[in-house]
Image (cartoon, rainbow, N blue to C red; front, top):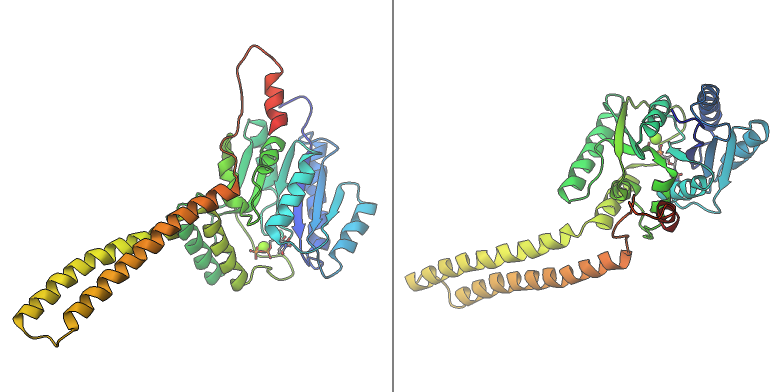
Length: 330
Ligand code: UDP
Ligand code: MG
């Protein structure tokens, strides 16, 4: 282990979590206390609650806890911006004060013990450690099937995500700092984090039920999250339109042969052949045209995100200061 233990910030986004907070705060405090005592993390480490514009008294609870519990720190967002944005706000704020961040949901569905393992991995040299569910036995059948369908669909659409990983993960401060370079509004962190690079690994844990309160992701929100995830990362749906157009033009050739044979055999009503040919052919031409225009729009869309093209990690050179510059410039 490194001589000086690293400073850890456990970032917990909270939206209307007053039911769960009285359970979460002591559980995480206990864990952090142990880690500090075992010199795994520094005494400056904190549990960092981010209130995402809750309408209940979540913020009052966080503030009250902060005044009596020195391990707890808090951040209040002025309004509700959603889980992903709240998490980003928390991570970026925490990264200025810490060496490592771990993001975890407020409902304790994720095994807090896995945080210890994640920190061990950090000392082994990993910058990003994903918490991955080893099984979904405790999820309802509905949640399990929809969630797994979601990962499969994302994969098919060419979005690289870590299977069965939600937003429970460790990130080093330099990995979080690189997140700043992703300026997009439609934030889908699970898709962005794998793009950062660095050495990454996973730890496995059993995910349990929410300890209290209700899920903030009902079906409607889950679907829009999935749609957001795909459309924020992939222009494959546009390519599908183009492919469909080409297939239909091909079909129109087959239809042309068929209609002409029917015409010459004489068993058609007047006008049918020309109608058939135009419908198929024009349909195909239209789809190909839309698909082609779409390809350009897709390119504009990718350019408009202004995502970083690379992330420098190390530069072997004679000047010793250069690596520090790389860190500071990102
Ligand atoms: N959350 C948030 N802002 C929102 C919705 C949710 O910060 O607008 C937080 C919520 O408090 C929780 C986490 O995001 O800590 C995940 O939400 P939830 O547990 O309800 O999702 P599920 O586990 O059911 O998918
Ligand atoms: Mg949950």
